[in-house]
Length: 221
Image 1 (cartoon, rainbow, N blue to C red):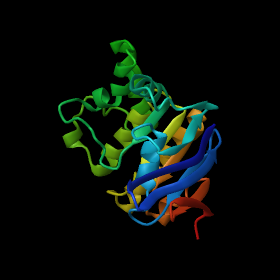
Image 2: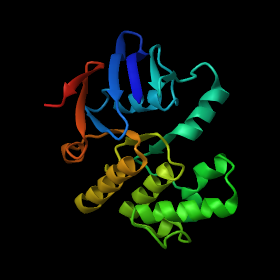
Image 3: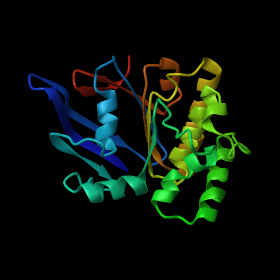
Image 4: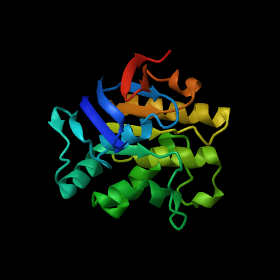
């Protein structure tokens, strides 16, 4: 499903941040990537999402390479295929919870009535049924993160990426959020990558990889 071959990226000319990363993720599989701060975990997610470009190597989804050389094609590819759960939530305070969740559908020009129905269904799937008319400012941290997950899955992407999805949450909310992510991957038969510092979070994934020295080293110790 997702193939990463020889991906490299550097910001310091003398030191590569990523130096030939290889990874294959199957449909329905959830892979956690752990590593020290500054090891390149978030950079790797950004390259996979097409938010940044590798210096060499390629990323393929369903055997097709990402169109890194065409900004418009890349944006359209991301719009249709990727759901991204950000650590900082990135909810728009002037929109309702349902409007925040429906943003990917608006970009895909889904009619308003269908957008609301699908947003409500996505919220229900993460345990927030009935929250659609509330504002983000009225939500707890766990509820905001579940809203972010609902937004990431509302358009049924085949690739789900999560950057430290439990970094701001207590243990109870972290477990609930991870269960939502796992259920979303299974339900959509998507493939998912999560970067995390949390061994507890990583343990819930199907496979754990360790990023160090610019490369994925296999099972984390």
